[in-house]
Image (cartoon, rainbow, N blue to C red):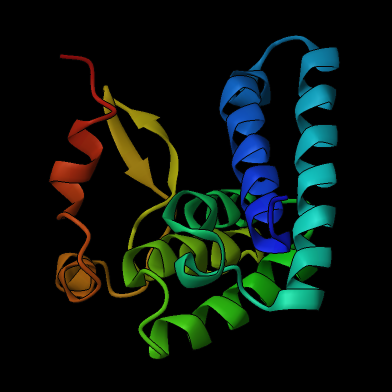
Amino acid sequence: MASEFEALAAELTAMAAADHEAVRLANSADPGEQLAWRRLTVRHADRLGEVMEVHGWPTAELVGEDAARAAWLIAQHADRQLDVQRRALGLMERAVCAGAASPGELAFLRDRTLVNEGRKQVYGTQIAGVRDGAPVPWPCEEPERMDERRAEVGIPPFAEYVARFSPA
């Protein structure tokens, strides 16, 4: 019989897989597909909120690497539920301080939450759009220090990061 944490790990990874399959719907021209994306992310964020209420941040030690990353992805996509994103951010900050979560993933979640609050991001991880064929980040605090801050949390420089999005 699977333990509670094995079952939770399976649930989180299944949610992330469904998210991955459906992410294309987020920017669909079809309003029905956009609504399906919103409903999926809301359902997942609600469930993550329940998990955090019971267990705190689902760390790799608790649920395994894949499920911990899945929880982070679900929090990232909880754009319409800032309460869930903020809670995840606070719990994940504590987990990072304890060495139990990724500083790089925390940086992405911090930026995503800041952008959703209408504030400037810190690490330049959130892309606002494309201008002249190049990805452009949402406004960033001290953009001249962006790559320095990215290095501090172990994420690649902005130019290297956005090269992944640019056509070859």
